[in-house]
Structures are given as structure tokens and as C-alpha cells.
Length: 463
Image (tube, rainbow, N blue to C red):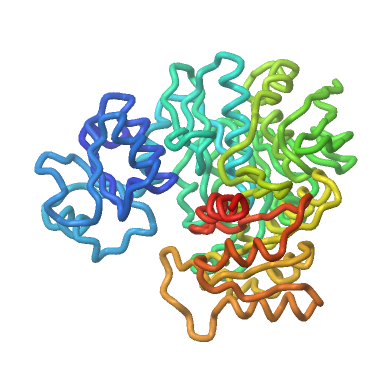
């Protein structure tokens, strides 16, 4: 007998403004729960939650945990010394990890879960937008906003639930999807995984959670994904479909034709050629759309209809999101923080938007990632014409001795790249203004607060 989902009628969220946490809170509020929470600062996300009737406290204090809260929801970023978590422990209030809460929301629905080292948010967004365009009204939880703050999750009336499945802390082991996508398998999240072997074991565990009779959609082109496919123990109750350029792919990508910031894609699916246009530049993003198409088809959605519906996708916040243009200079925001993502975004922008120069403002994310991948990050920045590298955004981590953004600057310069230390953000708008000319593009790149610089750069250029 399946374990019943935990009660979440009066949940309290610590760090409610986070991408994953806010989405769960939003769905619960839509379902009628009385939701409270706290966050370190005000944001568009917290404002959107308040508009739904959620009580959001700024800062953390034990007395913010209501007397009748029936559970406390936390992410892996919340430390044990958080006063609200300590109060919950003292009072015996059940504490749920974010992934446990999300798994409970999926209960009784047909789940499509999107996993992989990169591309999860984009692919989950594409699939969600396509299904909504067809009137299927799925519930969904995404690691980024579709458009406005608070659009990262929704409670739908349909039988499908589309979810981004996070491998960073192994939380995706708690889900039991009907259809699972694995976009790629690479070593990342070095604080939690010591080796690529551990990564493979983690993804294999996720695959083992796919429901009997379900489907795995997995990349046929990426080395780590192919290796995982070869390692998987045979399961008679699991259908495995590969997708990509590879001649042996079950869902084969025949063409990707860039057209500005869009791509025209042709695939061979179930013996039928399908062509559609999607508002993303470059092969990397086009392949995300193909994965979404394959997953929807596996869930029984007519492939031809879904292919056309994917054309209604117009992008997601922070995934090559155009922030504006001033005096012929375009500012684009990129969430890329792993070398593979950085390379894909820079290649996509170079390929799709003309001959102007590319200037990157890069903010490394996490000390552990910088320690392990600084050389690869430096190599990726060689694809830009100039780069400013800011100080490391620590997120949940404490500093590591000798690990600074200078490691990336040195690695890039070793390849002959024009890369300079940018340190703090205050001087960035003026520094960028001195570099650019009409026709150039500026990418603010990283998973931290570098995203806030785009409007400031545009304002400085307009002056």
C-alpha cells in the first residue's frame, strides 16, 4: 500500500522566496492551504505569493512559526541553526524537505519529471507551455519563472503534473514519474557528489523510480547519458526512448535551422516527420524542445498537435532572456553557471544574432564548483570577445581557502582570452559602457544576483 502524502494544510516555508520553494507554496495556496513562510528579502516572488494570500515574513525568527503550523518545509540550503527550524524541532512540528512536499503534490496525478545536469528549467517550461496551449491544464513546478514573478508553478485541473527533478541533492529520488526525461549526465554539485560514478548511481536510482509501464526519454548524443543508458539494468516494464542527432536515436533530430532567436526543428518520431518552430536559439535549446515533444507523446498527447503547441513557448526568465536594447546594444540574461551551459549559450548567441561582438559579465556560482571547474569555465569564456568575472556568489557555501574568481581569469587568459576581474557589481555598468558599440551583445551570466545587473547596464547606456 502506498504511503499517504503528509498533511500540508497549514505549512510554513523557510526560504519561501526560492525558485523551488515558492512554486510548492503557490500550488498549496491554490489548493486552499493556509501558507506562511519567511525569506531573507523582499522580491517579486514574495510579492506574488502575498497576492495569493500567503503570509511572508522578512528575516528569520522562531516566533514566526505559527502555533498551529502542521509542517515546516525546508530546502537543502536551510541550515540546522535557522531559528524557525530550531523552533520546529523543539515543538515537534514535522519537517519536510522541499522534494517531499513536491512529491506529495504529485500524489494521484500522472507525473512527467525532467532531470539532467543542464536544461531542466527550459525543457520543463517548454513541456508545460505546450500542454497548456492544448488545453490540458497541467499542474507544474519549474525552477524559474515562465514570464512574470510567481509563474514558476501552477495548480491545474488536468491529470498531468510536470515537474523539474533536481539531482543536486538527490531529491529527485523521491519522485515516481510516469514519464522521465534525462537530458544529460555530467559531474556537478561537487559538495554532494565526489565522482561521476556517484552521479551515474544517482541517476540510475531516479530511473528505478519510474512507475511500471512508464517511459524514460534520454539523450542519445551526450556521452554521460549514453553511458547511463548502457548501464541501466533491463526492465521489462520500462520503455526507453532515445532522442538526438545520432542515427540510432528513436526520436531523431533531422534538422535545426537557426532563424534569429528562434529555431526551425524537424524530427522523425514514430516514423513520421514533424516540423515546428520554437523561440529558442541554437541546437542545444532545440534539442530540449525535442525531449519535451517525446515526453508528451509518451504520455499520450498527439505528437503533431504538441509539436505545433511548442511554438507558443516564448522563453523563460534568465534563459537567454533579452532584457532590452539601448543604442544598438542588446543585453541578454543567461543562467549558465556550468561550463557546458556557458558554452551552449555563447555558441547559441554567436550563431543566431549576427556579427556583433559578445561581452560577458560572469559571476561564478559556488566555491566548490569554481574549485573543480575553473579551468573549464575559463575555456568557455574564450567564446566571448571580452569578459568581466565577478567575485564568487557563495549561495549556501562557506569560502574555501585559495578559491576565488581569479582562478577563472587566469585560466581564460591562458587561452588568450580578453578576460578581466570585475570583483563587485557596482562598477560593472560603467565598465561595460566603455567596451560596447552598436551591434554588440552583453550577457549577464550566472546563477546568482548577476541577473540584477541587466537593467542597470541598460540604464547606464541610455544615459
